[in-house]
Image 1 (cartoon, rainbow, N blue to C red):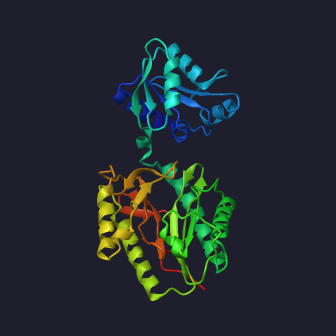
Image 2 (cartoon, rainbow, N blue to C red):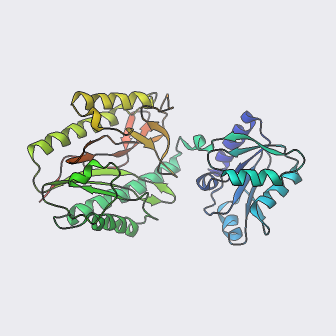
Image 3 (tube, helix red, strand yellow):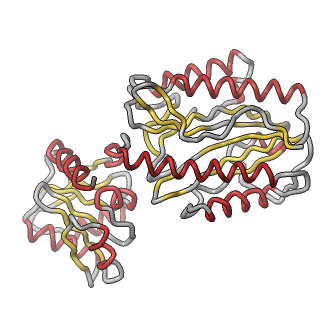
Length: 358
């Protein structure tokens, strides 16, 4: 798996006409080497693959990244990297323009000699957009953990429980089931707070008759899951039922549009149009979805500004429409969806019919 990724990275380098690339973004270090640690750089050329780190990580790196030559630094990561560049005679270096800090860029450039320079800004994230079978299997496991946490939380929620207690229960359950950490800050928004798309859990107590929106995810072997479910604590009113059904119809429609060849703008626009036709277009302000994997937010996006012209099999995207009525309520429903040759296949399996917790 790592050998194939290295091969693709080297092909990418040849296209960019770079002698080597400096990889410093942590998730890309993981992706292209297998190493899971920080304070490390990769230097990859068509002939070489160097992993530069310090004594804390040399043993770990040797175990996790056997295709790389281990280079231990004792006097500074950038100094050792510059030394390696000079020793191999590299001149034109590619670097991660969306990940390398300006100060790092300047300091590294000052250490380079013999006309070597950081010349070509590249975004290596695009090489991670199509997931491999092994990645998909791990993401399925992360999604299973989220589904199990949802099955547990609906037995826990009741009037008088705070949003923070709900968030803590979700995170604790996922941890117990193998999650390394929450995929992001868990969102729990009840009642009028549901109109906040990213309403972080507070001490607010849940009241009977309210929607409770929960957006959460697990991290398993470095890969993220993401799901949102909204439940009603107590009996739902007819107005709540109608609003929920509107969002559910839009969400299921969005999942049905996920297929090879579809564009991110097209899918977002069609779902947004359905909510507009229902009278709620102005109350859905964010994009329809995003990709995920080693990061919780990756490309491609499903949005008005998406650069994705054609979804490909192996991509993974969320589909998460919502309606947010300021001062009143809000709700969102979200699945993580794998693009297959046959269409969209949700990795999140939890039911989406309106659930009333009595």
